[in-house]
Length: 240
Image (cartoon, rainbow, N blue to C red; front, side):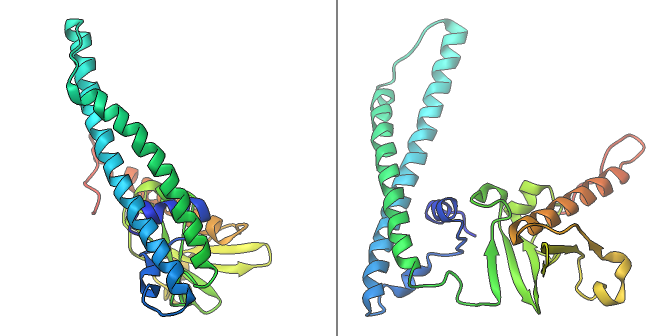
């Protein structure tokens, strides 16, 4: 997931995880869906532009406010840079545009989504382990018979406390009680080295099963990290 404003807004509103603006492939399709895709593309462009300008304005205001606070606490005076008033007004305008733009994106996306799947490959899925919350990262699921291999991205690894990202951390499989997560680093471990395979309690759904895997590996990494502490309590540098 690229975590750009448009894809993040869609994930927060719908829990659909996209890795790209997939609707762009439909803008020249020559069918009725193309009109929807064009409208979505324009809404996405405008929303991303507003988000960028809003970010720049907020950063500028933060710098101004920090300067004012330093001046007030150090000299009991305030300076009034001309841009502060203008930026504050601009911020209010951008906030209104941002909310309207977000609504436009979600409405257009819902119309487009009725006609298109979010993945062109049925053997690959993308999932938020914390539903509707992209801050906790994304996992990629690769089909494996009746189950799915689980691979966390960098944001997920950082959010959940894993030492590494981009590699298999196990799989999830359908279970009568929901989904069964199993932790390992190599699929071959299931048959060749079962002592390296750890079956975790069943979870209610696929997202919860992925979250269970992430929590298990985070706990294991923390334990391993503490076990590696030297006599002074210092730890070696974690791998990138």
